[in-house]
Amino acid sequence: MSQPPDQNKMRHLPNWIFASRWLQLPLYLGLILAQGVYVVHFWVELVHLVQAAFGNQEALQIIFAATGQHAGAAPTHLTETTIMLVVLGLIDVVMISNLLIMVIIGGYETFVSRMNLENHPDQPEWLSHVNASVLKVKLATAIIGISSIHLLKTFINAENYSEKVLISQTVIHIVFLLSALAIAYTDRLLSHTNGGDKTH
Image 1: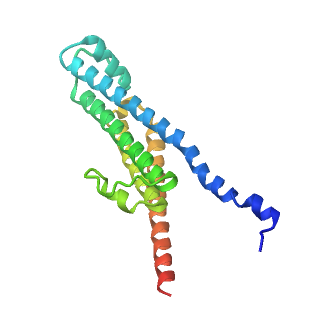
Image 2 (image 1 turned 180 degrees about the horizontal axis):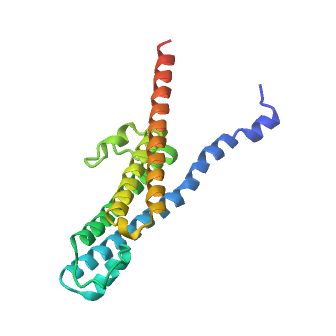
Image 3 (image 1 turned 60 degrees about the vertical axis):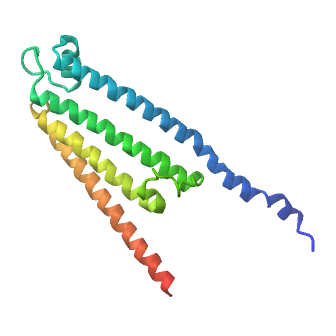
């Protein structure tokens, strides 16, 4: 029995729709380029820190401007607070880079194509059971970590910020925290529901 003409015309549509997932590939390649920019930024900041530690006044001025330390006279040497702010900035770059890796690898594996890394010695542990829900929770957790670093930097350098800025950043961090808890709780409820459905 031959299929109706309309069905013959539509039989390739699901394949085309499924193939559209490859449109996300340029997005992930763009994130890899962004990762490269963060690598360059990290090394530029690190070089400035090392140069300032050896007394380079130009590097010292760049660091003080970047960390938002404008109070008092012009700096002549690195202080413990300045070093801490720069190091926290470097840690912030690393954490954002980790977030990019999770989005690139996890997103590609979940939404585009399998990477077939089961036998690769460097396969991330979380990639073996990654799905949209797991990726969402991990991203929320990573964002909280990044927000924590920003908040710590602000409190260390609190004298250069207004009370309004301090309160705003604290409130934003709490909102991130509550959002992550809500996402994790929702994912837990969905997991229990799916597990209960499978038992029936």
